[in-house]
Image (cartoon, rainbow, N blue to C red; front, side):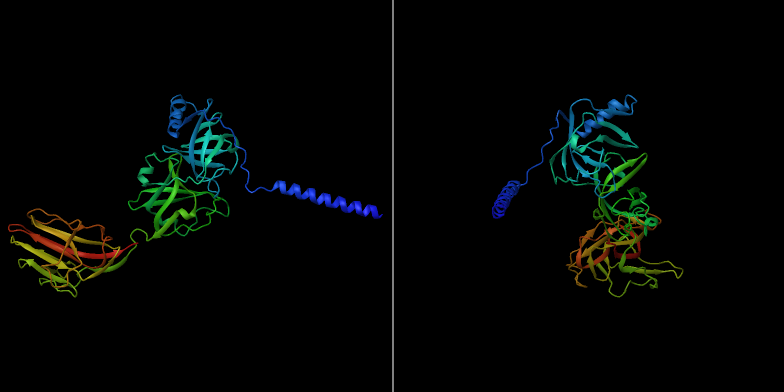
Length: 424
């Protein structure tokens, strides 16, 4: 019995020693790289050449698809994967020329930023509802990853440019857009019933494009943002409908106010102004630098209320100066009308060194703006100035309307509905 116990202890010691050696042999300071898949490179094509193959071998010959039989390959970078759930068994890739959809045989394996080489032999090139795709791709058999984190930067485009078709399947950024009013207070998709939904994006000119979101997307249940801004997406197409596919909710940056939604920091519609007297409103200045012409009030007691200047063919330079404004990324608008216009000019100017009296020495900078015109005899129509950008001016400034005429020049100019505002 004693010998048995001794032998048992010896056996246990040997086992522990052997196990330790075995364990130690499994531990390495560096992880081993997985075996490299050998995919024949063959002739390397660009995506532009692949599109040309489709045109020549499918469209021109009335076929449905093209199957690669030669050792061709194409190098590209993954711009959208299926990790968010907004696409399934699919990925988008692009090179310097084009973008295209990869229809995968199984989900996963490709990630945004992967630089890859795709072996094309045996794969099918086809068009599905207007979207070009390489079909039946097996990540293990058809793809070699050349590098990771090689993210492509989106191209900044307009909705009009997308509709030309030149950005199909490419990563783009659209600026200064918002979702239409009827889409507000809704979700991107039906995440409860897993139903894909379309929402409509619009720009300031009213042009629209669809944002399509799968009910399986990680952001399907999120609210449509109510503001305006920019977003990054892949350009897709379904039959005649152009659409955008979001990669992530974090690429929707709508932090600005909606079109037409603004804070007014100054306004003047000259309501109640005294007819036929020099403009003398609180904080305003009505100064003739050349000549004696002044801005006058007009009020017909029937709703027509504005200020005007009536040139008389003498040399003149007269300023109608608004109260001092503290500007910070602002915009401006007003209305003007003109009559009997012979050479005289109306300008919008700005100064940060006018002190209320030094009109002779103050520095005034002209701001581009639209003013009404008129025939030499008679009157033109009221003209909206549109949005005047004051964003390059920050701090305390005086804005003024300057009437300028040389001897022999004249005009009647009218001004109304002045607004300074912000809509950021």
